[in-house]
Structure formats: C-alpha cells, structure tokens
Image 1: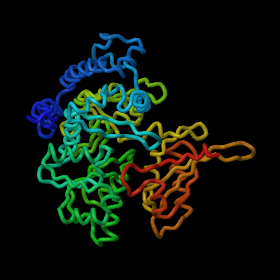
Image 2: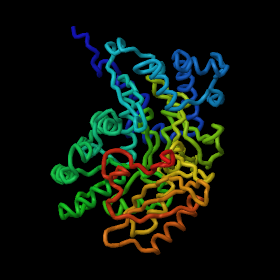
Image 3: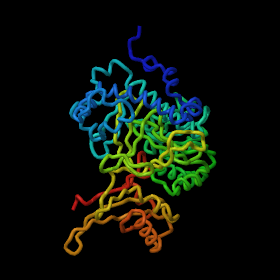
Image 4: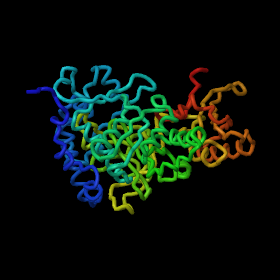
Length: 473
C-alpha cells in the first residue's frame, strides 16, 4: 500500500466545492445571497477560525498580551478587539522560529505528513516571508481565482496565456491552478518575458489561439507594442475575450481605456495577495471590485491609528480569511490602501460589497515637506496626456537651499518617441500633479523606454514607482 501523502487523497474536492463553489454554483449561489444570510455564514466561519487562532501559538501569544481570554471573542461584533499584525510580524516570527514561524505551527518533520506547497511573498527589501499551503488551502487558492475568471467570462475551452513565472511568487500558480483544476480552461504557462521572450509569447498566442490573458498593465501594453512593431500585426487579431489584470489606482479610467482600445476587449481589474488569493474582482458591470466576502472579512482602517474609517473613506485594508486554516490569517493589516464604494446589489446581480481600485501601498508613502505622498497617486495625471507613454518614476531627494535642507520630489515621465520635451506638457503635468498630490513637484520628461530598468517595466512583477535618495545625503 502506498503511504505517500498524495494530494488528491488528502483533500475531498467535492466536499470543498460544495462549501466553496467555484463557477456557476458560486455566481448563482452565495454571490447573490442577501446580506443577512451572508452575515450568518460569515459568523459561523469566523467563530471556527478564532478557535483555530487560539490553538496557534502566534495568535495565542499576541491575543493574551492584548488582555484577551478564550470566550472574549463571541462573533464578528468583537472583531476589532483582536490586535492587528503586519508582514513585519510574520518576518520576525519566522526569524525567531525558522523556517515557517509559529504562525504556521509546522516543523520540518511535519512536512512528511501531508502534501504541502511553499510560496514566498516580499523580499524586495530583505528576506522574503514564506507561506505554506496544505492541500485544502492550495485548492481554495485555485477556487478563489477560478471564481474571478468565471465571473469575468472565462469558460471551458478558452485558452489563457499566463506570462507570470510559476516560481515562489504566487501569481502564475494561482491562475494555472484555477484554469487547469477548476474551469476547463487551457493554461499556457509561458512565464515572464525573461523565460519566454515577448515576441515568442505572441507567436505562441497566435499559434494556439490564446483568447484570455492575465498580466500586469505594463506588460500587456508592451505586448501590444511588440506585436505591432516586431510582428507587423495588430494585437486585436487575437480576438481576445478579456484581459484579467491589476489596474491599480486607475480612478479616472485612463489606463483601462488605453488597454481596451489597444486590445479591443474588456480589461477587468482585480485585487489579491499571496495569502488571500483572489480577494476582490470586477464583474462585467465594471462598477467596483466585489470583495470575496464568503471567504474573507475586509476592513478599512486609518493608516496611523488602525481605527476603522467610515464607508467611503480611504484606509489600510485589513483581512481575516474565513476559508484558510494553514496558516490562519486573522486581522492581517495588508498595508494596501483601499476604500469601500458600495454595499448595494450590483447590476450583475452580485450582493458582495464593492471596493474601489487598489490605491497603492501605505508603506510606500513618502513624506515631502510634511505632506504624505503615495507614488501610485501619479497615475491619473501621467495618463491624462496622450503624449506620454503612461510610465513614471518618483525620486525623492534632499537638497540644501539657502543654508537649509529641503525635501523635493521629482517625477520622471516618459514621453512618446518623436514628441520631444515640450514645455507645455511639463507645465500641464506639474499643474495636474500638484492638484492630485497636494504639493508642488518637478516634472522631468525623459525619452520613451528610459525608465524600463529603474521602474521594472516590461518585466515580471509590479512596476517600481519610487526611489528615495534622501538617506544617501
């Protein structure tokens, strides 16, 4: 008898899909439930996850230090009694209790007992944090992403190209998992442009009739440009059904409009993290991102105080995952900025609350002359003039002016080839940025492609929008 822990023998997928449906059963089931019925489900799942938290040393220590005892958290009305934690706390925990930390409550020896998958998030400014998935949690990651694609229009027989490498980063895996295991969509895991050069990506797409894409806007823009300039073809020849992407703070809709015009299809926004999976998603009505409310509770709290902000106010997103058990995730301050835009039923029939676009990282905030600046807040201004490529990079520096040190922000903006560096464009951008950011900045116009390396454009992963040189002075 084979005693090895085989994935499909370690999780009852049929039972899991009954509890967390993936496609039609989700769209026409819990996604349309009235608020009181959904709340009752959340209450049941929340009480269960709190029990798991008390059995977990990471949470038990933190909650006890906050003066809590078992029984103090009776339901969702007591949620804000639980202390917040951040990715820094996970990193500290894993450093003190290697390799996975007390939050996983899992030793190396335990790895022989189940079918585990390790992913990593972060690491751009130091050591990455590891996240371990058991078979149930790995399946749920795929289910959450499958829901997103189904709501946006993905159906069996579609072909989805996934230019994100299946590495320790989770994005490529999540979409492969969704397509292959839960939707009957053929996943083309071509990896990043480093793994499969962009021209080759396009050749594969035309050969295999790719009709769905998942990628960041910067790479989708690069694909369309490369198709035109190197293949001499229009990307719209692919007849793409939709783009599943991450628009960021595209509050004016300019980035979406540019993508939809160049590709000839809808571009749907979404939000997710390594731990959460598909946390929020646009439906075909494109009127805000539905929070995945049967799987997670989302709060929006003040960046400085952690106090909940009123509906419509911008704050850090805090998540409690109702579905995940390894590791449990309870009041995790993601330090991603967001705001709730509607609690009313959507035109699509869905009743899950909706949030605005992801508005940037609060820990990417830079303070210039007493004003908090979020680099992603430059998006609308830069996209407001079609002479730019839509790419920018903020540079914070400290200069001596009249015997005193003064912090200044320069925003480098790429302009299209042949445009040059017209003064009226610079003046327009400086005026718009001052209005949007609340502070006067200097705009430096640079040639198309000049920011590719510094801002990580046209490559795998998120674009970099800030360089802070003040510590170098």
